[in-house]
Image (cartoon, rainbow, N blue to C red; front, side, top):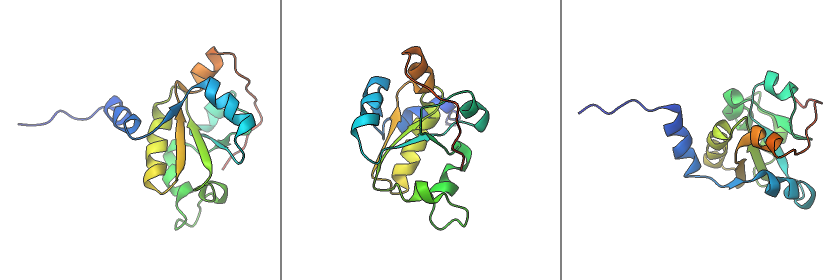
Length: 136
């Protein structure tokens, strides 16, 4: 019997089973309480430019593994050095960031979580956003 092809939501569901998520309210508290917190925006540059969480570092999902791999010549030092720091990944709705968090955990990151509902939920709850960019 042939198995049905997997869908995006199958991958997201599998990733969410492997990770933890925080709400926008929890993340806003973490921003002032958790030292060395790295906020990781895994959206595309055009999305990031429209507004993001203050201090977020942009590493699009499509280059995440390369950026986080110490053996890759063009890795992102700030991301690589965050392996033992708390990391919160976010995207538009929480799917890409869940997959990113699961991937980073598999790559040895100790404390990486995803923002539930992504930047859309963050905006719906009237949380602060900025437009200055931090690119990889």
